Image (cartoon, rainbow, N blue to C red; front, side, top):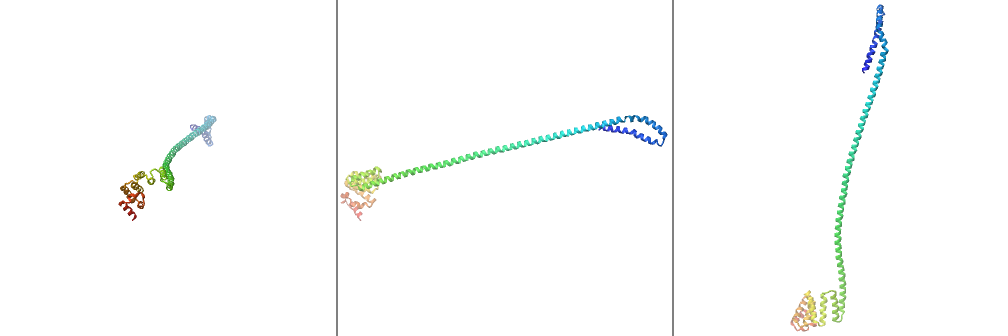
Length: 302
């Protein structure tokens, strides 16, 4: 800019003498004497500027050229600087955007990883708790049904034992029934006693078999044996009317009338059917003259 100002000032100084010369020349048309004097003096003074004019123009052109060059350099530098600054700003903006996006994605990735980890932990806990709960439920159900199965097995074994026992009892009953039929068809007391012994072997302590065995012993006139058998029955069942009747017969045959009448009276009290049997019993032959026996018989007949 300083150079521009200097060039303009030089151009103004260059134009000033020419303008003055033109004014003096116009005045010379009116006054010739003065013109001669005036012309002689300015010529002496204006020769030097006219000779230096090309140099001044050259100087001005060089200054303008330098000024244009400086302006172009300035424009170029300004353009380069502005471009560099724009590039720097763009680079910083891109870097900032890149860092921001990177951090944003890091944050998203971290949050997603945390959520995934927490979710995976929750799913694993849910899976573990579910498996544990299912195992406990299955264990409880298994134990419950095992207990039920044990109880059912125990009940089945008990019922099986009962069924087996009942089957065995049925077999025994059938066998004893067959033996009773054999005893009824036996012709001699010995045969009857043999059958009764088989019954007692199958079912020891059978009171009915022992009582009928005592009856067979009475037929064999084995009074003491019959008495012993009746006592064994009455030890178990003191109100057994049949055993009392058989023992009364044994006492009567052994001559123990009071004991015989006492047993006969008790037997009749327990079973009225023995009144008729006693009236026709041959073993009571020695009691028929006894008033007490007659009372029992008469009572039975009435």
